[in-house]
Length: 320
Image (cartoon, rainbow, N blue to C red):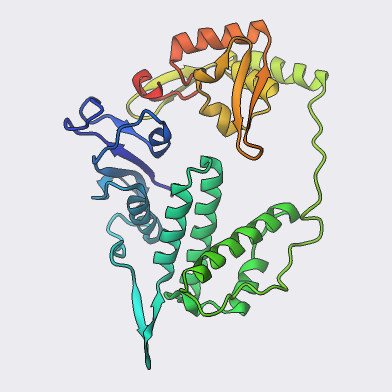
């Protein structure tokens, strides 16, 4: 089961947060964030046992590496490799050549991606890929990076149960990882051969057909029939209603944002009847228009739930 990683603040936190309050990695992407040396914890259930445990690390890459080892071992007592120094083994007969461990190569790769401040959704894809690569290496008994052969990569690639476009993109990530390793001279040869091609249709652009007016009406009517649902995360509790679902759906419809982006939506993006977004691919700014009634609904929701109106289950102070 995936663990939940969070930073738990002490009274010495320079930002002045209350004792034992929690923040997450995404919170630290804000420009107003003050650097913090408070420890990072993990919580969740492993081996049928719920627990909160200190990783004894203050940097996210180091803490997530330890959390990953606990998840792989499916035990809170799972052993994890030291983050510093990395696993390096001298090659017999050639003292100038070293071998790097797979776990350390993965940690370095993810650290570079995290440092680039890429979108959280994209970063999750990198983490999923590296987790699958390590699980595959574990099944084959590989520890060192140079144990991968072209035949191993062929089998790994063939095992992906993905659609053509998703598989093509995952192949690009696979090439990116081993190119990263080659550029740092951790490998003498690249196991991802040039003749490993994406499946047919991987580059075909799919047609995106919007919901019809009738379909949208059916969705909204379904929200009217939705019964109120109580929720609790152990510290906070509340009720999710059909009106909450309507707010979420209408923001999706009028902005075209992904579900995860609406879940983390910040009211600072609303400027009058426009919602501001920064388009990273073209380097420009995008403003999307919303009608008056949706603007007013969002305003009421912000007044009730805070600047992140769909991020329920955390104190309002942490959503600003």
